[in-house]
Image 1 (cartoon, helix red, strand yellow):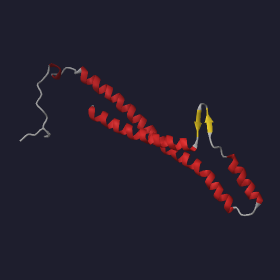
Image 2 (cartoon, rainbow, N blue to C red; image 1 turned 180 degrees about the vertical axis):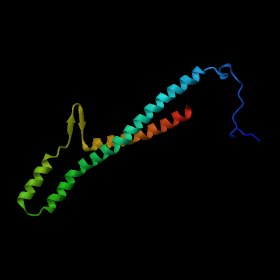
Image 3 (cartoon, one colour; image 1 turned 135 degrees about the vertical axis):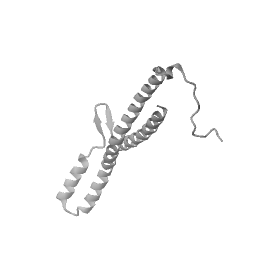
Image 4 (cartoon, rainbow, N blue to C red; image 1 turned 60 degrees about the vertical axis):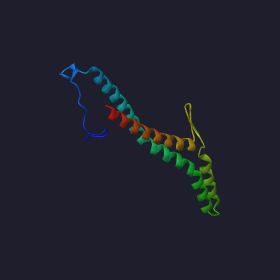
Length: 133
């Protein structure tokens, strides 16, 4: 008993293009989907490589002043150690400007999470493109 959900392929009438000729619309469609698949997969790979680095860099940069504050409390009463720790703490920038880009610890964390979301989206889209081909 066949149901609409059975795995049987529907019977197709043979077309003139199916007798050894080239089916240009199908070839064009597969070519377009292959280009999209390539682009989605490329973005996914780059995002998966860069996202953890950016995320760890942002978390480390935001945690560094807190770690130095803890080290300052552990330093004790030695004035030279306190001066050195204070000098290091004041030399950590709160933002870095690279060309027209302003980088802050929170922006790096946000960018890392955004790259992870882009990787997930491109993985989904590349799967859809692969199944459509």
